[in-house]
Length: 311
Image 1 (tube, one colour):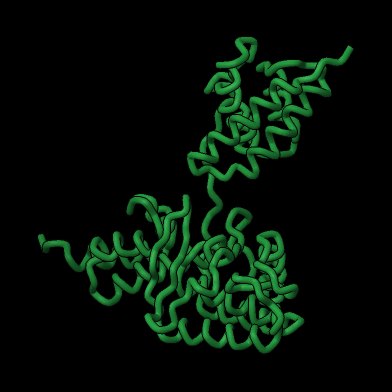
Image 2 (cartoon, rainbow, N blue to C red):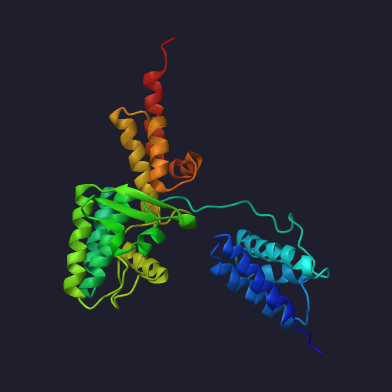
């Protein structure tokens, strides 16, 4: 006879998600994963969480990376700790089970000619509102370094044309106000005129809209960007360094620091300003954006050579 983890575990999962969301976590992916895990338990005739089943579920996509397996098990582990308070039969997977070091994709730093090629490729999209939206998205991210999700999340009233500022909502709901260069303000203003002309019936509060007049969905944004990369003939730098939309943010950070070195500014003074601009909690969070870039390392080495005392 097949047992089932519902309704007890289902109720615990609902309570767990409610409490964590009340603390500010969104958990869309986590909810889907844990719901799948409960279905896995049901299919395997388990009425509670066991280490064996947690491990089996986490490693079920055998072709996935060790990091992905570890993240899946980590989500289960957090829920199991919660559930164990109410159900002493719940087994919590050990913290060192499926260890995996954090990995990040190598940043792809775009040249100005490549950014221009992406804008030209965006202009070829159809219908015209789609071309205008993706041209504006790419130009805005390249000029301000905001995250993809932040750009998609902008509303029309996020832009203050009188003050020339953009109110950006970042991670955990934190907001920051970015002063805009006249060219960026002009570009956003022109886009608003274009969308009013091309899609006059769109009443969506979002700044950047789709062809249906709704806020851009992330899946569409990334799929379209990959096609633009192909159209612009931008090749990967290596197997682990491929052009992504998010890399416009990396490019902005590197370009800002390069300008600091080349103009004779104090990089140590520029870095915390850049960190605040990017919406990072600490300047240390910005360091990743500046590592492994040969041009920036060369500029730093040149600055060091010029300031080294002669022996």
